Length: 368
Image (cartoon, rainbow, N blue to C red; front, side):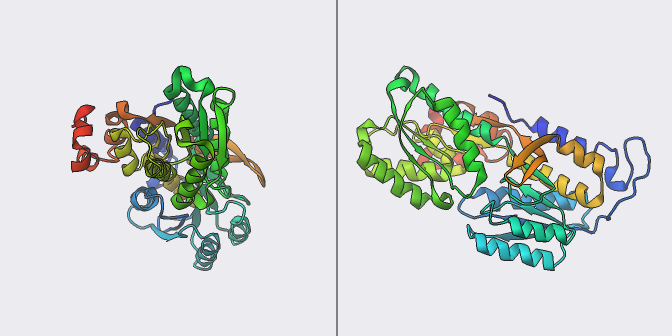
């Protein structure tokens, strides 16, 4: 498994600023650079929902801080969150076009539904960078995590947790929203690891990633399969994992079977400490968000060398081929590496995780 490290973030930052004084209009060879725009730029940021705490806690604040730093305090971020409403996000995008922002970072609620709005932005001369989820339409670039790897890490972790029992174990698969292209990639990656190794008896998609939907689906799976027959649950993210675990406990489970997750939310990390959730996929939001801000500023200012250096990968969407992209690596988060991931990267402190309810669990794994 690949280890996300702060060094990667540092190297990416160094790359975009590699032009030694790049924000002062000088490249690595001290040759003056003519900027398309100066530092007084406006970045429009459209995020999809609030159910997942990462968007309000990490993505927006980090992007805002980085844009401010890269533009010496002159640039600004205009932010809107659609609260899982695709139509509302469309209206927010239209407003940002009308307000003439310089560049858009779009994390789509519905990757297909956003496409007409993306085209309108492009027609208005506003570059669009797909953030975290690959939007359809004529986007200029994409920054996200290696989503297929996320699924592979989740699937591999489940197989490892089941050990010799894997081949005859009954697994319930709780996927994400069909409107999110990332969900399909997570599923594809997971099936590549689970296929032929376990018995997937029930599969569900989770409308808009809503935990209440996941909980209802898990309750249906318990009725259909039988509580004692469920050996593990593939859960696409931590919100779903929490709902799955609640459903299992309410059904009377004595010991929660292995359940995967993604996003390393605080509640999920605490469940991992307590032994209720087997693992989560840790994704360095500071790295993703910082790189997105750098890409946006470089694109608006016409810093093509830096922009190209940040987008060495290529991805395809249903409407576009070979989109310049940055795919950030991920790591499996378990009880064994909490110190080396979310604490080391200053996502959480030990105090955040080890509240009174989890004090003894933290002591058991020497988390102090």
